[in-house]
Image 1 (cartoon, protein in one colour):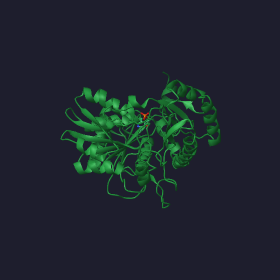
Image 2 (tube, protein in one colour):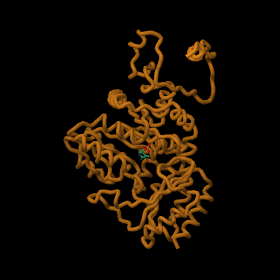
Image 3 (cartoon, helix red, strand yellow):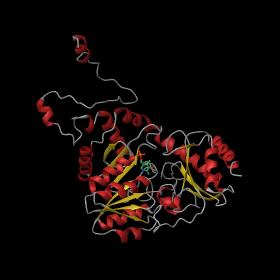
Image 4 (cartoon, helix red, strand yellow):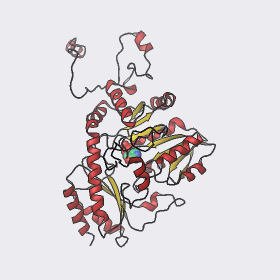
Length: 412
Ligand SMILES: *Cc1c(COP(=O)(O)O)cnc(C)c1O
């Protein structure tokens, strides 16, 4: 290389300090440079008072961590490359061979697959519990139980579980609880304080709150990221040590994308909630639909639990006066329509795209075979028809309703 390249790499110009803009800058690094060897030896990655290596944080990831901790009502946050990595990080930090973890039967599917695959291979057993029955959870907590997962509402089937009571059972038995708060997004309720009302202190909730930032906080359908939030320094350090040993860093550009989306999080959540409720109310009245599954509707299982935790009383509960819910719901088709017909309905949709995940600008639809997703022992699924889940994007509700209407015509 010529001297020119050296000069380009070690250019002496330093821009003036004090630059200010609405959004923070993006810092990207693997290597972090130290002023001298003493500083190199003195710096500790554990307490965020300096930088050691890109994997252990940059100003951009530190900033996002603080904002997500605030969003969840917690104190410390760890960022990981996906929502599923957050679940895995928690399990790997807290469980060892011989331990047992309890998972709700209606949990996010890949969380159960992790327990049935890697955790089982490492000598960690798991049991599924019926999350609608706190007594069922209580009866399954034994001397080997080290961790209980919580999630509300149930994945795909949308029944709203008695979350505060389940967390209370964990506290009563002295078992660490971890909540997957992706649906609530830190807005519908406070995972650390599960008393009535979003921000009201109840003296209890989950010990750990994880979220797939992939969904609402990112809001674009273009970032994969997860968060692990705690309120306890020792628990945070335990999770952080595992995080460090696993090497699960996140990229600066992805962290910046989430930082950019956070100011509109509440607006988007409210808009997608309102759109979902509008379409759910319309679909519930259609003759093709046997059952609506949306926790804000009285006809849905667990509605009373949703009302208790997220329902509005006009005093700031949830994000909206009518309570808070994500822009997500499912319907069960009348059993006279077989799987092939319901597939044809999904294929006929034009604005609703076929795809997993949610929280982005594009409305999505997925048909599910529920009986294959639930354990036979706990299955109380009463429906014969096919379930279809909708997640609302940001399109005009009238356009989405017209799309549903034309696709329903494909059923006949
Ligand atoms: C999407 C999702 C996850 C996983 O998030 P990824 O970033 O896709 O790995 C975990 N839990 C719930 C409830 C989710 O919806």
